[in-house]
Length: 328
View 1 (cartoon, rainbow, N blue to C red):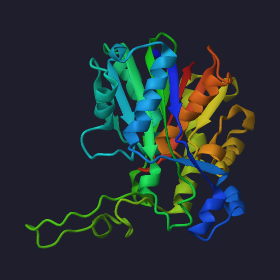
View 2: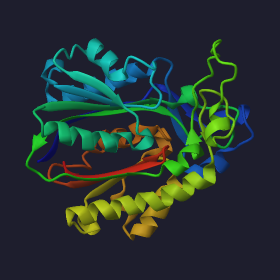
View 3: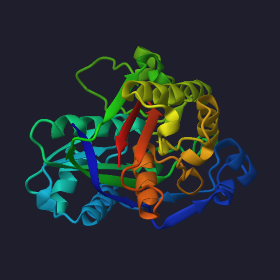
View 4: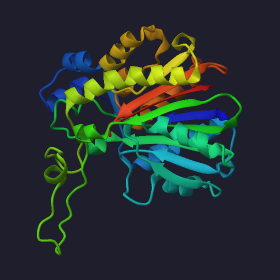
């Protein structure tokens, strides 16, 4: 049993910030940003993350021709939710009026949508009929805008898909390397406990470097090295699992972390760049929302059509990676 996408949706905030705008706050240039990342613009949201999730999820439902009460399960993926608790999925469920849906969040960083597809496949095999999978991120809320090496990389946005079970094949490969957890993280602000004589910080206890609480901290070289290895490896593994030559894939939708990473993976896989769907130039890195935003854009502009074989591949903090193959 596999998955079938009934509808897709996405939302990008109205506020668009180009590279030139960053020259007023950090020592950088449009030329440097484009050369090192491939990014020209990004979108920033001035409200809660769940607002974008609701917009993308509603668009996906409309695209599928369904009502909120038709959904049995809402899964949301995010690293930038508005609350530690409740889950963003519960907030969306309430606002949407999806009264019949179970709701919960997943945190698998930038591979969240791929992990979500794997979970959806399992739930659909155990009695659930239709699942709404939403990935929404407000990375601008956890971006350190004084760090010139990272602040230019991130944006906000949301993407979603409505899925049901089908007899078409679905294959996935998931993995993690927790030894690299300290290379990309955002730690929670300290909350002094009056009953403890001393509270150890993350940096003191687990090898994480000192960082601004609540802000993303990234060791660029180790993350880059992991990404350029994990991404092609994940594509190869899932194709092997499916017994499918890579050349038979119609489209590959990668996590939009950095154009140089994507280009390196393309070279390693010896596939044409034309098979890869990329929107990083206009949307930057929106973590788990990258893949479903690109998916929705490609569906709506006619690039992705029914019957085509799609491979999605993500990687990110954890360090985690994941890939999946399904028929659209």
